[in-house]
Amino acid sequence: MMTFDECAPYPSTYEYVKNSMERTTRWAKRCKDYHKDWDRQALFGIVQGGMYKDLRHESAKALVDMDFSGYAVGGLSVGEPKDLMCDILEYTTPLLPKTKPRYLMGVGTPDYLFEAVTRGIDMADCVLPTRIARNGTALTSHGKMVMRNAKYTRDFNKLDPECDCYTCRNYSRAYIRHLINVDEILGARLLTIHNLNFLIKLMDNIRESIKEDRFIEYKQEFYEKYGYI
Image (cartoon, rainbow, N blue to C red):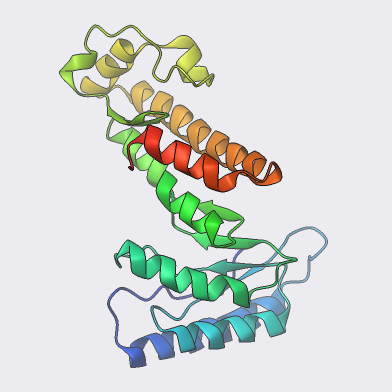
């Protein structure tokens, strides 16, 4: 469960973000004081501070002093350049305890997940896999597939040859394309199942690559295959 917070838009002035961050900190204390079921439900504090490192530091210190079950980094991936997001995340994550989960809010593309893990993040979430599914897009081991495209009209292969999810085991690209193009809700459901499975499997593979001390190699392999390089 998350404490209340305000996610400041990008760009925002220093004064606005400072007031927003301080409000988030006050809310965090009120939430922690109210929350009593620590043995049944974890409560995470949310670090804010926009793109200002001193505010990130102040926010993180206040939350760590409150001793939450885990810590989220909020207010990133809100329209800022990717390089800036990575820079702020790289600064912020080390401010949080290594012994507790560190969660990046609102990222879901494979490249952002890799960059987050590279900087010490354990958890992430995003509406992306379901949102793009509703629009007819699949995440696959070889990149995105826009299923509305005519080239899949008579393509009876599975959605992703490297996937064993329910969708890939039972439905062809052609049938999924048909469902999407006639606005049948089953199409969006099947793509949602696949996209969620794809990202969960990706994080499983990242976890295994870390255990095997080959994360950098796996990241490079994935980027080349997916089309990021």
